[in-house]
Image (tube, rainbow over all chains, first blue to last red):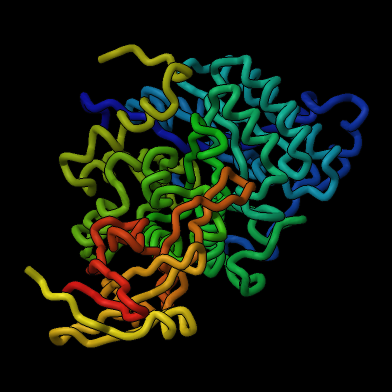
Length: 363
Length: 117
């Protein structure tokens, strides 16, 4: 259904098509290595979705992934829902910063960014891209960010939830500095927890089941990065830096902010550069995508009241997560959201967050 | 006009760091700033969750830039339970000004401490 409403989708996953199509973007000296690896050498999970990672109603060529051609994204997301701008986030590629070799990771990230530009952004003007970078080597990551930032169609740097340490750690400073200096926000998308060189999710060890990871692992890493960035004074250091947290859930947010603000009052001596409540800093610098908005068994009013206590609707931006199985349909989301939140969450907040790089024309 | 009440000996405050007295049903403490020796009288009840506030410690308030530590000249009283910081002159919780503990004038005469409450 396409209506008069304006819509920005902040999390569209495009998939790899023919492997050789991607390998063509890898530098020649490393191409054979990547060709010889399963999944291009990206680390894997010890658990997996029991049946399929993707929506099962999507049409695609036999033997190929859904969303592996720009026509799929046009037909199933942009045209179908009247999406004005769709932000591409890739998929497994985001775990590049968990590869054991930072040299391979740097080559993969460069190839992914060039693949993004040539096969996606060049072919569809409604799409915008995310810059992958090898976060395990923050200096190399900064170099890749600066290389790609020159193209206005890249609207953010993209990091993965799984990491060696939470992203406020000073080791990552060159990366955030490059993003801030380039005027690019940093997106952190859940995933990769416990993979490759990443820490285990949640501090209790690796889960057994995908259901455990999907409930906890993806949320815990996002919580950890949020708290870390705030405590390290990342936003005091880089006053123009903005961060968007993708697919980590939302219902926990007021609880974490209440805990953090309370602890800040008593433990501020550890982080004395924080001269105001962390939740206030968050409200100025951090946004969250909506998907997967928790199903509340009839308690949506309570959920939205809690989210309002955490700063909603200003902090929320719509995302569908197409083509994954836990996709949020934009028209269904419109019905769930409080009427007075809809324009902000579906369009205005993301338009303001990404700013001029979206190239939007006023309605 | 509130009355002045004698609450104890200066020597006791200097030795113990604080003295407590009950005035009109309220427990009031006189605490000594170890930096400079100034005396401050406050109600001995933290407005956050009821801790005996005057059992806390007075320290210079920490400040800094990200990754760099420093201290301000301003002294604050740290609650002995949760560590919330209170300005010893105004009684306000430094990090949440919706919260304030009552403070009282204090004076010393001939080695005896008086509080106006």
